[in-house]
Length: 294
Image (cartoon, rainbow, N blue to C red; front, side, top):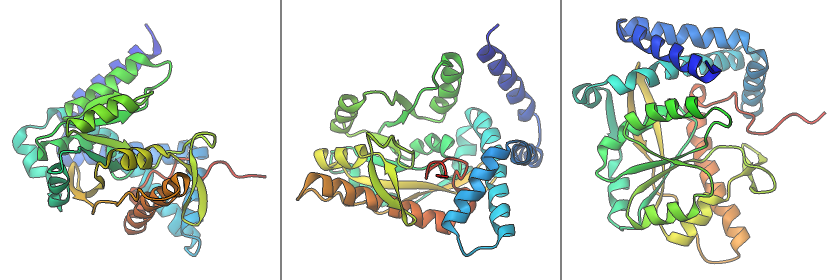
């Protein structure tokens, strides 16, 4: 039996166990796993604290560690929620999920150019597909496949699909994206992943240039499709409000490289705004600024 098969068996067994627990206990299990990860995964804990210190340079050390610990706890809760989402009834979904500023998305879809939905490693991004129930249009998410873990990748994708998403592997997908936008579908793209320097564009994030994907700006400029940022606001265990941001204007006249930089900076600026508002909700364990240079 492969490692992937063992992991999937364990995950399915755990999924069955947490379903019989009361909600308070489910939340407690998520917090417990998050705290365990905080203390065991020292290298990732150090990355999180270093990143928080970079952004909140004037904060004290105890606050930085508290935010890092809360970040890990939220990740534990996110994991439990992801396993439970496929088993929510329609009534439960209506009770647990609400939407704010929906008119921004509705107006964008009326243009019949599709919609580029910017999402981030923020709150529980893995279950954002459940909010597709708010829209009549298909929501298609780009997802980087797990290398050398096909079975596990398929299992995780099955959880994502159960929330209402359609998955498009993020490998040479430009033509597929263009086609989906022409069909007025919603394309969800993670906008805060670190890009290779050779492929990305260096754009400021909290005062320091970081390699950032140029793809979102290029697609927005080429297609004219509205670009709208979305993020979840945590309201309790498996309870969220989906917030639709104002459309980010993709400027299209001028030097291409300058426009890509300028438009991508607008995306990073939005990310900065929600991190400052909810610092414990971002995925601080990611080496977004790369490794420290010695």
